[in-house]
Image 1 (cartoon, rainbow, N blue to C red):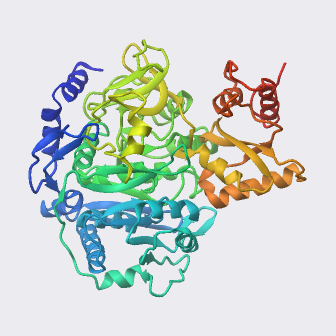
Image 2: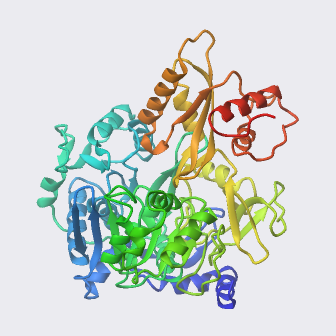
Image 3: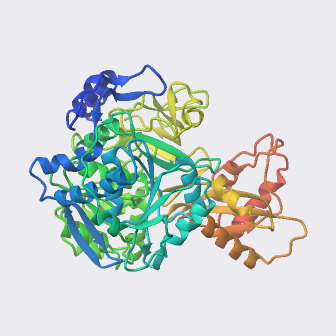
Amino acid sequence: MTSSGLALHQQSLNAKDEFWAEAASAIAWYKPWDKVLDESNAPFYQWFSGGQMNTCYNAVDRHVAAGNGDRVAIQYVSPVTETEYGITYSELQAQVSRLAGYMNSIGIKKGDRVVIYMPMVPETAYAMLACARIGAIHSVVFGGFAANELATRIDDAKPKLILSASCGIEPSGVVAYKPLLDNALEQAQHQVKQCLILDRSQCHAELVEGRDVNWHTAIASAPNVDCVPVEATDPLYVLYTSGTTGQPKGVVRDNGGHAVALTWSMKHIYDIGEGDAFWAASDVGWVVGHSYIVYAPLLVGATTVLYEGKPVGTPDPGAFWRIISQYKVKSFFTAPTAIRAIKREDPDASYAKATDLSCLNNVFLAGERCDPDTLLWTQEMLQKPVIDHWWQTETGWPVAANLMGYSPVPIKPGSPAQPVPGYQVEVVDEMGEQVEANQSGNVVIKLPLPPGTLTTLWQNDKRYQDSYLSMYPGYYLTGDAGYMDEEGYLYIMSRIDDIINVAGHRLSTGRFEEVLCQHEAIAEVAVIGVQDKLKGQVPLGLVVLKKGVDISDEQLHKELIALVRKEIGPVASFRLVSAIQKLPKTRSGKILRGTMRKIADNQSFKAPATIEDPATLDLVRNTLTRMGYADALV
């Protein structure tokens, strides 16, 4: 770190109360906090306990009150519908206030849950902010998820209301959401009394009488309501992330710490302040969309770009650069997968070179490990700093990043730079001992985590402790493996569990296995994540057929891919699957997924002493070789 960056980081660890109290002065409070950090119920730490505020007021109303109502809050760009328009802070306040008024009118109150299953349209942001306005807890579910995935989240969150739309729009065509929602509600045990449906012109939704209500009709007559004070420690939202068991984990984010941390990050990491234009090219269904499409830019009074399109094909690989130029985007955030897709279509970056990008100061990459080639290509073609940074759904904001708005350090391709103030990151071995520089181990963060990170898992404190805190007492287990160099740069290399990262989407291999096992021909399944140049990782399935089953490889392949698409959704990118005679296991019956991953990725490995049948590793290598992975046996 630079000397000023190092001093700031040390202050954040050694004088937590003073550091975060100063950061908290950047947002508005109805009532000041009693304690900055409340450690009375460790490891369930609380930030700004006793304080009262409202996230929607801080993101919307206070900017209008300050005389900035005419500033564009959300710039909507939808190439798939050929629509572009800006929404000012005053217009945003009016939309959010009426939607919140409608929710109040049907009995939604502080603490109630609201599930949001919507595409990338401004109404999705209105929905999130309206919940925050009245203290309801929103849970956004990515619109590409299949009905049963939505159903599991409905059963866990138990919402009183669902906000949805008639459809989402992909380059391939319209994706009807309403049939998926209807199917999910049929599968769910929890009964939802009302659904508010945004009817889009591209696809009409059939409403269920007595349950479904048309969005525009309902909002037209709804009253305006003011923001209500909530406790800083009250939940703002629940966001589900994949668990190794296949049962999603509901990450809980509070109001106060979340607003403070995101506000601090916009200035110090992204170099964005009042009036600047910021674009996170992600989806509101993911944590990036929560933090850096909706909340963080609005909290600091910036303009946020909300994009319904793809990096290529809507209409061409120059879409990102045109939008950045047209709307004077100062800092741009996307995933390495998006850059790789653009590079594949336009390897010489001819579109970027033909566009005036003088407004652009920084490009940020996250969501998956950024390979050095992608970073270097982007940097060379754009002639801009390209910042790899690392964080998780659970943390809600960056753990390791270059402080571009405060004290930047030299970029090292392959590293997301150094830990951000507030995070004490260490790399430890299996016994919890810190390893030496450049030695791989498990990446952990010393407790307490800073503001803005998860406070627990929804209705499941025990699972929170078991999943994140039990392996190394006093530390949060990130689930990632990596190392630190002698200058304190962190390198994240892989997952240490069975979650795979498909184009920035964390998906459970256990969930894939559950789905594949539904096929009547399948006796046993192992799914692993293998390296992919475009998506970072993709799932690969090895299946053992039941004895006596007669099915062609082609038919099996087709049926299994269709099954995963139906149950998990196209986001799974599941195309690699093959039958195998036997899976490698330990004598106790544990499938050696980690060993299979190493074989697929051509990494050295040592067969465990507990392996039941060493010959099964030869079977795996031969099968993977036929699929285009692993080296052939010599």
